[in-house]
Image 1: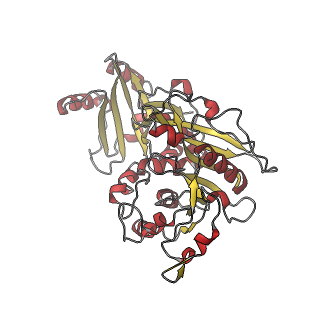
Image 2 (image 1 turned 30 degrees about the vertical axis):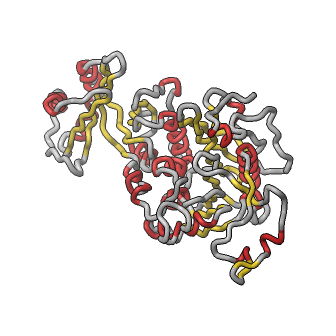
Image 3 (image 1 turned 90 degrees about the horizontal axis):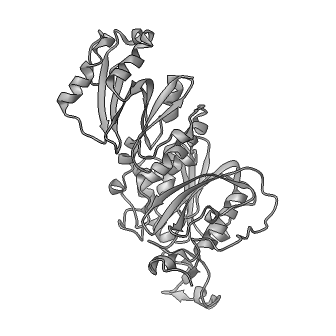
Length: 432
């Protein structure tokens, strides 16, 4: 198959291949590459795809891919590149009279304008006769000098056939959002999670810890119908957060024109949810509260049930009927949050549906066994975002068979995220 160069954004390196694989499945584009050739410190990966049309389709909604380039040549020197390009001169004829442009870039070094002009002139042997157009050119050619720690360049050359959707990061920038709170997920990761969930037209996506609704927006943008719930309705309504009095989540739905695809939001404890029995959702996308910015809560009282407190009148109105009512809650330990989330996914996802969520882990104690398992959920991706003494991991799981048992999955040992909130505020002192 023809070779193409994937030009990644040089950040979130642990997330790039999982997104590429998710898009391959989502777009039904066969992609072949050797995972051993992937270098985290490099923005380039050579892959094989059947055609340039399929390559463009693959990356059209990518968040961590800048562009995809039809491979024409590479080497340590320009002489090496020229020699490889000249081996397939029949390719040039296709663009001999087309309007064209050259984009010259460098990774690990800056090039002056004079150096870029010299690079472009070096490809004059292509003998293109069409007009040069910096906008809307029929063909765009890409040259990049990649420098590593040895300061020896590797030069890449080819024709740009498609670009990703990194412009969406600016569009969904939380700083531009009408409503947000202290747990609002940044735009880039929200969009990435929508890709991991393979959100698209005809899908029904649920966020059980909806907060200010970031995932409702991004999944709806890609065509899915979404719904969210939270035990704290104040976040949903906009009576808590950084920007109050703007109609909460609804303000963002109007801002991004996705009201028709966000079905609704509801207030309840996800561990005691009112959903009908059986599979319902095509994906569950969420950021469980693990205590760094907001502690997890579930319905209940630390001292036990006291019904008279819920039934009392406040200014003549039953306590539970007040618009600002917040149900009694108790702390919800992190390992139980994740356990219940997996059980929710096992029961409510359709077969083939995906669970995409964040898992906090302690850096010095993490092992792969800390990622919870379930008999009907298969781990697809585990990508780390480090923060020094702790990390959060984007976990993607896929339901592989129907749930035929409600037996709890008991871990063999305590995971590193147990009591995460307490350990975070105690600076992760070793457990006695």
